[in-house]
Amino acid sequence: MSDVVLEIEDRRFEAALLPEEAPASVERFRELLPLETTVKHVRWSGYAVFVEEFGEGSPDLTDLPRENHRVYPSRGDVLLYPGYENVPEILLACGSTAFRSPAGELAGNHIAIVEDARSELAALEVDVLENGSKPITIREA
Image 1 (tube, helix red, strand yellow):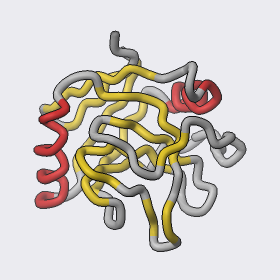
Image 2 (cartoon, rainbow, N blue to C red; image 1 turned 135 degrees about the vertical axis):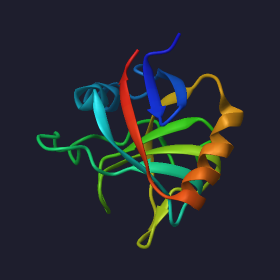
Image 3 (cartoon, rainbow, N blue to C red; image 1 turned 60 degrees about the horizontal axis):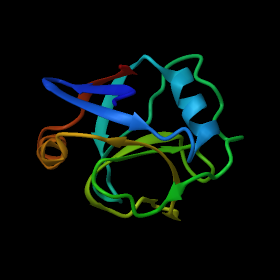
């Protein structure tokens, strides 16, 4: 059962939220939706893309606790990073990923899992790496 949809150009990914594992983070993530912004390639983390622009009026995320946090997410994992040591962001792992910044390793709260089209994630990562940022819409299913 999908809870959210991520639409990146002509690609569509459905994801299941993890409210039992990360209740506060999932609730705060839902407050951001619908979200229309851009997705970029990570510079430091490996095979992943991320969103760092949540728009005006976005809630402050720095009070979120660490819950279900990951430094090494698996393909299809969606992390919400509240911005403890860096800027807040949403990371989508497209392959081998070590979540980090110039300041070192970061641990993001694991809030969702892409349920299908995991093979398409590798193609997305290459496309964003080679061709630059893409528009993304994240919304409730």
